[in-house]
Image 1 (cartoon, rainbow, N blue to C red):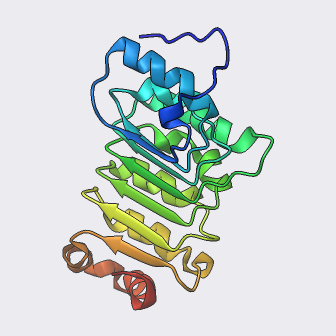
Image 2: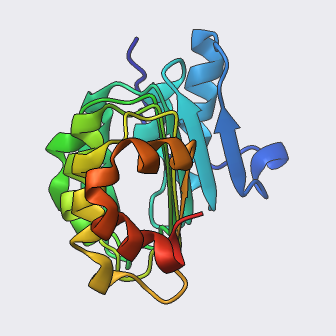
Length: 201
């Protein structure tokens, strides 16, 4: 489905003060067109969506966003998003990023390296995506890092262990079923302990 706009309209009165916008439902074409017409002029702090209304992502004003949540999005929408975040006339304000059930992020190292995120939450990502993310992830400001329902194994642990000198003092990682992972890969004990000592919950 394609959405076309011939002009940049003013936002509706009911939405003019909206700062958090999260849609994870099926929408009719008229409703999609309506939201597409007002999103460019809304000063949103948070935007979230899944694969159903994902076309709305290209109408968001990324200059104001502090948080983005994306679930099961098509990978073709990711590169334009990073391009918009990093090429605007204003400094990027994005602090938190949630990625769930997505593929294709392993092909976007530039965006993840350039964004000094304060929080990153990943759910259901394949091993290749995790490893690629941690090779290039900007750790300069990252505090909570959450990895849930993901294929996390010794290769990912090795990558994190090799970058402990880049962790902030407040860095904390939340790994679901972490104890099972750490026990299974006992041969990585030294690396695991370096990460676990202060940073793994």
